[in-house]
Amino acid sequence: MIIKKYLSVYKGLPPNVYIICLARFVSSLIIFVYPLLTNYITLKLNKTDIEAASFVSIALLVNLVCIFLGGYLSDKFSKRTLFLFSQYLLVICSFLCALFLGSFVVVYLLIIISGIFGFTNPIYNVFILENSNGNLNTKKSGFSLLYLFLNLGVAIGPFLNGLWFDQYLALYFLLVAVLNLIATVCIQLKYREERLTYPKQQDKKVKFSLAELWSQNHLAIKAIVFSILNFMIYIQVSFSVPLQFNTWFTNGPKVYGTMMLINASMVLLITPMILRITKSINPIMLIIIGSFFYLTSFLCLLLFSNLVGMILFIFFLTIGEIVVQTNISVVVSMLAGKEYEGRMNSFLLLIGAFGNILGTSIIGGLIVNYSFSVVWLFIMGLSLTYAFLMFLVYRKYSFEK
Image (cartoon, rainbow, N blue to C red; front, side, top):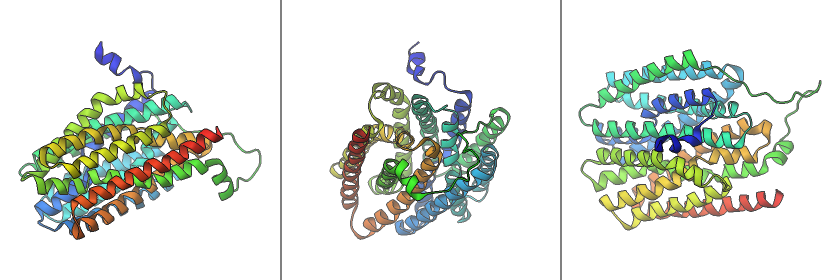
């Protein structure tokens, strides 16, 4: 009865939403590819932190290119077909990682996997939008459930690769390959594609106008551009945080995997509750609140170390993560003109990729030339700036409304 009430917020969503969320769960077993790449390069191949930062930046650049490619091809071909192709490619790459474990080939395969996630991310978002029937609450619940299932995979994936990193990493890759193969076959059999339809222009050739795009979406564009700060902040969970843990703990990957298990378990437990509590709060204001939780989490890394720093960091980070990440696509959808929803969300993913690249390249330089304390102060400054900029968007939205 308690579980039924707990999950009631997700009741009544279209069947396709549940199917795509299950796919998200299985693929997210390896979605934290950047910390895995960082640890593999530094601990398995004995390379330096700056070399790890270079390859992570390359992986993020590939991710960015594949977002462009995925968005372009999804306008030309069936999204379902493209999605299935990318999932089968993920299966092949995961199997090859197990086969070539211990060699540099795995680095290149993990970079390809990063590209696969870039390719499919906009498709996941469009799948939710296509099946929401234009209802804001359905979109919020759909994106929240997608995020919940992603974290279910994150609860298991990083924990297993951290636990098995020293001796059984090949088994982890094989497990990911087999489970994704099963899930992809199920999607191929069960998912039915829907298509968004918009009113047709009567016998008029539609001309693209930057002025019209800006006039109908200026707040959405501002929110997306400002959100580059959000992605610069959040990528640190996959980049600088595992590097910090490697200096704090002798078994850094295991501790990091345990932290991500705690993070994902908290997400699973409290996301529906937070969604219920914040249902009447404007999503832009929720992002502002979440930014202050980000700030507090990195303050904990600055003030504390070892186990205390990890526990406090993950507690505040998880709350901020839930509030920001489940609402950012909702904010863009809410601020954009209806016929621009899909394109604006794709633009958000592109900005996210740029933010990830900036976050790793800038922070990699700060780590080498200064210290982790300087890094955490810098990230706190980004969090505060992001909250202020989103407040400006909120004030303008309230005035125009």
